[in-house]
Amino acid sequence: MAGIGKRKTLSRSAGGTVVIFAFLAIMGAFMLLPLIYVIVTAFKPLNEILAYPPKFFVQHPTLDNFSDLIEITQETWIPFERSLFNSLSLAVVGTVVYIFIASMAAYPLAKNKSRYVGVIYQVVVLAILFRPEVTRTPLYIIMSRLGLINTAWSLLLPVLAGSFGVFLMRQFMMTVPNEMLEAARVDGANEFVIFGKLVMPMVKPAWMTLAIFTFKDLWNTGETQYIYEESLKTLTAVMQSISSAGIARAGAGAAVALLMMIPPVVVFIISQSSVMETMATTGIKG
View 1 (spheres, helix red, strand yellow):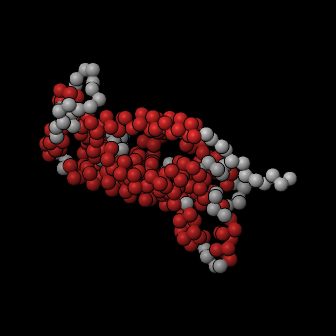
View 2: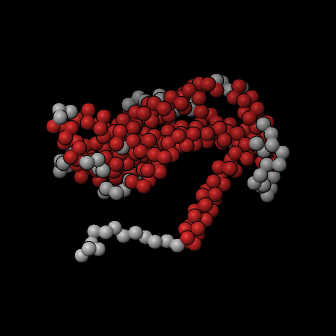
View 3: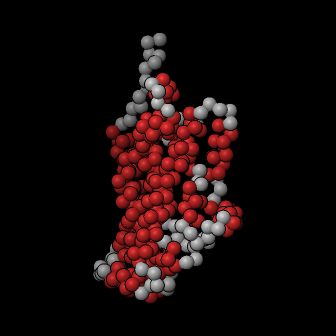
């Protein structure tokens, strides 16, 4: 009986550790190759970009692709700064608002004991299964009847209605001890104080991870069926039109791919520790 309660530990030989580390290193390098190729291609001259078979590394690095991109953006009807402002404001404001909405919706789903909570949670989970292609037509009808076509709201509202953030935040909030919340209530704290000063700091890895995913989705918002005015289009939409303008702009398109990749990567690097913690924690509570 003395052995009962002792925690089992997995033993692994040094050779096994080396093999696992080598395997993970190879897989990591393999997944890093597309990012490296995007960076390398942005500095290739046009003849190397169009070369067949394509070569992975650049032989004659050049900055002509970026200078061509600057010239193209200066010739557009709408200033480059306007498109950049549209993308940044949409990504930053949308990320902050969505984290707040998803967290507020997840809190009662995690800590409320009502019999209807389970049904609502199942609806949230089922909503994750619907691809944007499935909801595109209904969303257009809704936006049209609300008079939101050609407004920033038509880009923001579909993201704010997403259910993945509610699911993720609920999973983490389930791990917050109920005893701690009850103690705060006994001390006189209301639900908003408990939510803002107790629950949210404890689930910081979850909303930091959610910030990465939301920022990425909003930043990459390109051509949509809701926006027709050039002054309202995002930087992604403008860059997509530039990169799809034919072979002559293949170099500028390569520069576009690199520039559009930088902001999400920077956000991920800043928050990567929270992402790792989220991957290790989420899914513990069902």
